[in-house]
Image (cartoon, rainbow, N blue to C red; front, side):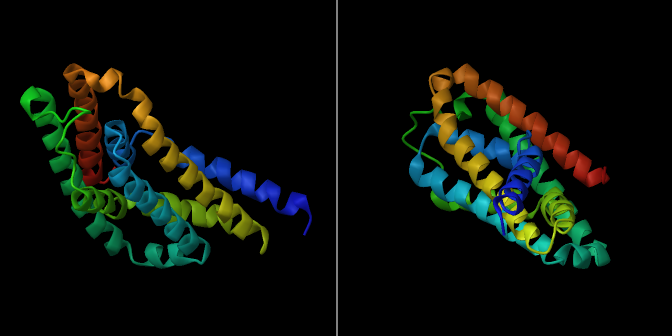
Length: 209
């Protein structure tokens, strides 16, 4: 197999993966907030969970699990209801932090988000979001299967690489914004944006649009 049969599919998979991942969403917003706090012990497992989850779902899509999900739409309905409720509740909590400055968590806080809480929240944002299944399993899986028998796995590798590059870049690069978030007002703005994003996504999921 020559370079064109490996490098080109990898680059195509990388570009396709980034086009889906680089967007303001519940998962990205949460990773951003944790990353700004700059606590490696918390952010490292969180970004690893996000990237590995995408990898599992992409591989599942290439293997044809997307067809199984399409044949059992009730599974996505259940995930949609649970995900909508989770997003709306988290959005309301973010709105409360934005409205009540005393509830803000500054960047130099000595009471960081517990690792267990961060992991559980990340798992919920990832696996209770039906859009994740639509984007990774169904969309990326279908695009990947349009490649050749050998090229599709190189393509999948590129898409998986996109997830690792994005989440690790977002999680560990967010600390560059810490000077801006040294002010409590900046955290109010961030939490206000997160609240709007979460609640809007939750309502959209609840309405099925």
